[in-house]
Image 1 (tube, rainbow, N blue to C red):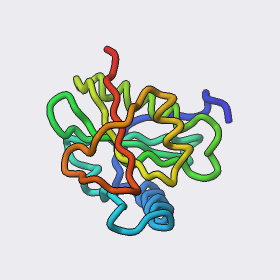
Image 2: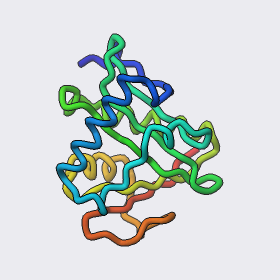
Image 3: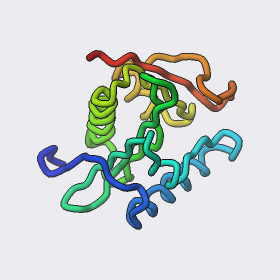
Image 4: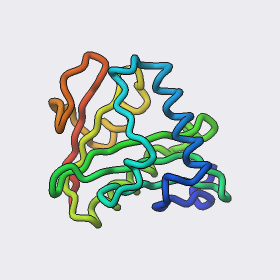
Amino acid sequence: MSEAEIDIGPEDPRQPDVRRMIAESDAYMQALYPSESNHLVDVDALATSDTVFLVARRNGELLGSVAFRVITPGHAEMKRMFVRAEARGSGLGRRLLEALEDAARQRNVDRISLETGIKQPEAIGLYRASGYQDCPPFGTYTPDPLSLFMTKRLQP
């Protein structure tokens, strides 16, 4: 999959194909974790003014998404990192993460935190390789043996 043929940019999460992909992501997470350990935000929450929702497309085909929402001035939480099965292993997750960090910097966000599940070694590996470090629960999260919390200070 050539990088030149993939476009990443902000889009409305309420589009029908995006809704279907978010349902696919929800099903994937529900297969891995019990409901009390799933911290999924819905499409309407992703469409608010304090949230940036990015999608990756190849020739119009939706391949993945990532979002962040500002939780305090300068601090955002990453949400909805998802790459469809057919695009996994192509480096798309890394490209989405880089696009997210660029969009965050443009909005004066200098720290991004995230919650991910311990049963997702590929995601954890990507975050660690990209400079995210383990941290305590943040915001409204509480400790969960199935959750891993990570944070990163963005360089200007």
